[in-house]
Length: 339
Image (tube, rainbow, N blue to C red; front, side, top):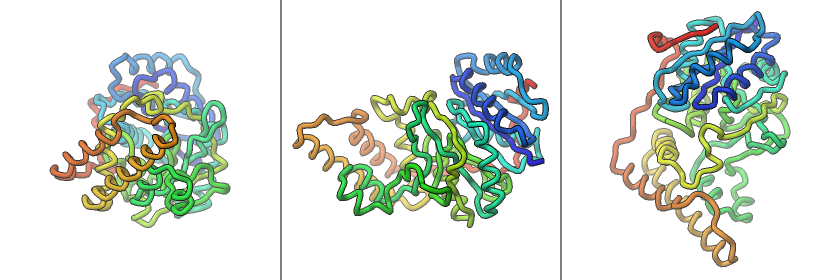
């Protein structure tokens, strides 16, 4: 039997996290392994709530279910790294690690479809699901890697430019068939344990956003492939914990992650060019909106904040990558487990 480690990382959404874990349990009817709920140091008593909810819930007899406290909120990557390292101590036989967002619900055959696809395509290190919203709307599950052309296309928002740069448009929406993509949404991703052993875990320098993009790029550069699996479907409420869709102003950590991704994976000069193209594109889009008499939408002070952040980052050293090895145990003193 194939063993899978499921990690559900929670931050202030304990009820949703337990529901997500239950959906994963239902989707693991033909697999063994462990389901791990990790609280990322939520200040609202989430850890205790998840303990109680987990104890009260019914779980399949063939699965181990644990609730752990990471002890610090160092972001999405660090929290999932903690869960992966701790989980593989509990279930060292896991062939795959499945990461599921706390505000997501895996359909009953979602994990089986991912495993079957990866077993049939050995070069695939990471596979992602077709993620959709509560009303069935596409949440955009597959993407090309960010680059200079995509920065300009996304910021100018102009049809002729989009058609000209169609091979560089970041979101791929719903590919018609399962197959290779640049990177996939971290809301539902299955990763080979052997690949993680080679390329490492998430880079913890990212607090939030771009960490799954970076992991997929590292896998790609190591000779692996990342695929979107259309047959695997997951419902995602979307940004409940981060509130991305409701931002009135883009948080600093998004600018930090964006700058770090470009400067780390390309160069500082590349990051400067990416920002310059974004500024030009956004400025032209805003000018066009004013000429057309249409309101400017989006987060307030976006250009001002991005320029201010990147100018400051330009005179600071690029942060060192913090990529943990799979073989390094999690800090067991921070673990509290409930079966």
